[in-house]
Image: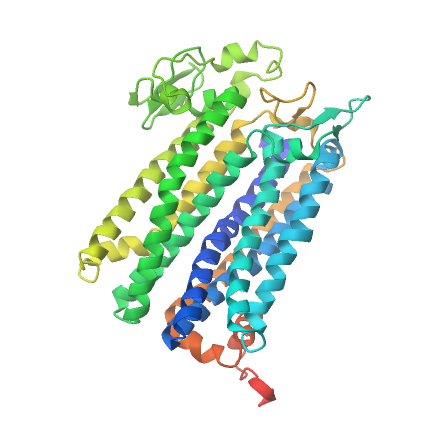
Length: 488
């Protein structure tokens, strides 16, 4: 129960819960946004009614996900000014620009052209409408860039210096701060992971219709789209994973050591799975000798510093190895790696079955593909936990290239005016509200999928927006007939 009187722990727990929930919808909106743009492009080229139905169907799924993502993202920004007020004072000069740019450029770009998709099919040219679908997807990717610029600066600070009184970091070079050593690596890795989710969601929808024996033409086209997106993105994901590992090795040695449970200097192995005995500072489990070394340096004999020796350096002297959650970091990192292998296996099986024409007959594979999006969801959440837990005990990490003094311990970033009971109350309220939002989103998505693209086409004839908005506000469940075009 001691933890529930620890303000820093509770503030971290609240932020973890809100971000983890929000992070379900961010990669999904990026991935499904690409599938939606592809579907809109297919209809623009073919002018086929079935392709129009498919485009309407994916637009409904995207809009529902986008709405929940926006709503759940707002609470994080509020927490910067409440629970993490001291953190905001320290990084405010740096964070102001990317967060403002995300709102002014990315969010408005995405929102404006989503409005075109919802209300403008009969009001703009088909070419402009098609371009709007791609601009919506581009806006979601641009939004992710600005957020990752801010988050990457926390991991590898650059373009800043500490104020004379030591109270805050002051921006000295915007471009150096924005394109710090890990921005590109982490952005590429995150977006490719999001596209894997989008591809597997398309595959799951197609597999569902194969199971039900309905919407055959739509299922076949959707399966092709999903496989193409997911396979290309997965190949890119493995490339980005290596690049990210190199970046962690060069900039965040304590994180790399924690990922493999390494306390002493050694050539680190790559564990398949295992258990970290934190008391004895050992790892129990099967491993490949030298493979972590290979991931970061392409050699099998590079010795890496362990947590104990890093804690003795001036740069990382504030770290106590016994306080680092090594066991948790080890498990979430290896979960992410294991799930990446599972995703690749599932995609290979789906590709073989599709190209051999066996997918309609392999019921076991259909059932597996329906739940397949859960694998990348779990993997991307595990990757985020690895990144954020791995930089502890700092909220602004003193990376290898960070300017002198530009770092901040997590316990020093929490607002002194926030109390433990207040945090416990907000955590309970957030969990209740977010559970309701998730159930509402899940029911809407399940209903859209159950109805299928044919129903989407019927609704879309009077405009996409009324049908989607009515569902979001509950009119479809009110027992009252929804208004039709012209008020009829």
